[in-house]
Image 1 (tube, rainbow, N blue to C red):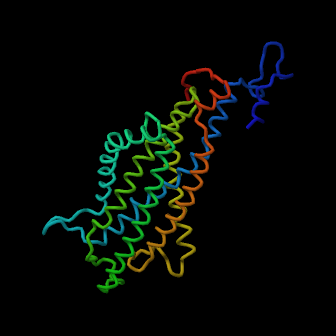
Image 2 (image 1 turned 90 degrees about the vertical axis):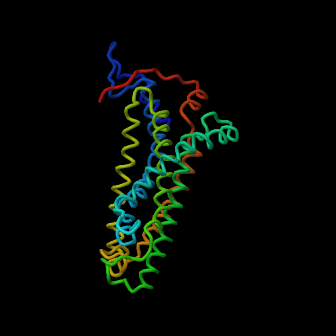
Image 3 (image 1 turned 180 degrees about the horizontal axis):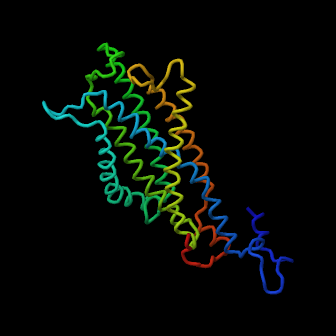
Length: 288
């Protein structure tokens, strides 16, 4: 990114004591732009996690609506309420991380904070892959029960399989969300330039929004490509939703490889600037 340094070279754009800010910038301005550009590969490789997350609130809920949701003789669990496993998983993951993982990681990795922000994001991405594998296997199990009971062409019939078979994929994505959420926010807050701290929340929220957008785009592409034998028909009993989950697992693995490459390449702002002997001005928060 040395080409950006040219923007800070004073030349004929200075007329008297007036500087054309559109053609010349301070060293701080240039370094802040570099900081943001260096974060973009990490930012891009976290989008796929939220694509996986989107499936838990759509197709996994659709799966649940076909399964046995009874608890006792009279109470039936609403299909959409399975998202409570997200909350339960986060509530379990955070204290376990603070009480057990941080002390162990701080000793092993010589880091008083336990896992670094990027390591936490990496753990979340791995958990999302395992979740998609679990989701695919559960759907295969569900379809076997459907076929065994002759319910393939009966979309409104209840499949005699407990809805709690879906719990592992919800719990895994919930734990992954805890790690990814904490890691992303910590990373963006730490690495954003001092004068652009408000941008950190925007970067995080944009990955979430793009994850849901990519989920919709992926579903549209899959529906067009598998039009003859749709993976995701209106009647899930006739479809191959497990193939869609396998596809997400494969995409997540490829994304994880890209993330690991980017994370290995990435040098945290504090260390890099210290090595280069650069000290940025604290311009304070900027208004937007």
